[in-house]
Amino acid sequence: MRRLHTSIIPAVLALFALLGGCRKEERGGVPLTPVDISINVNNPAYIDVSVPGGWIYLSGGSQGLIVYRASPDEFVVMDRHCPYQPAEYCRVFVDESEIIARDSACCHSAFSIVDGSVVEGPAALNLQRYNTTFNGTTLRIYN
Image (cartoon, rainbow, N blue to C red; front, top):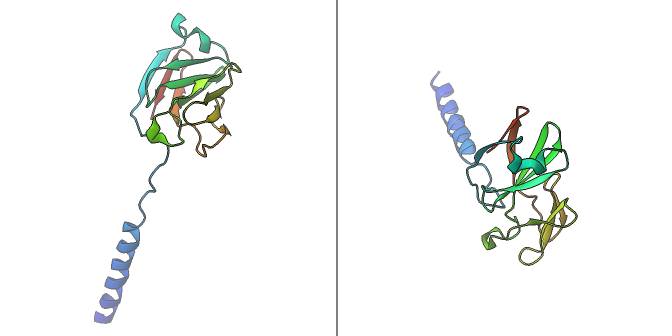
């Protein structure tokens, strides 16, 4: 019986050592900024997101938000903070195509506002996306 206890203790200690080394990896890109915003999409101030394919800027996040209406019930919300060299605090702007957000003066990258994916580098990370819920009237944006 004593031999069993002496073999279990090192195994348990080794397990704790392994679990302690399983920390989450540091996230790259933009700084984590708390967001919890609700808007009534029927408000005239948000008319541009009243139909699919529409988008607006909102205050919030690290450098502001882009809200894109993907379908009648689905919204995509991204931080405008370019994830390439995030310490530079570069901000993307939706260009004349109205589907690409880019910053040609600071981070020299472009992203799709449909999903935040990189369409032109040097950025390797997509725009930071936020969670959304929509009840038909109120859009909640949160992380």
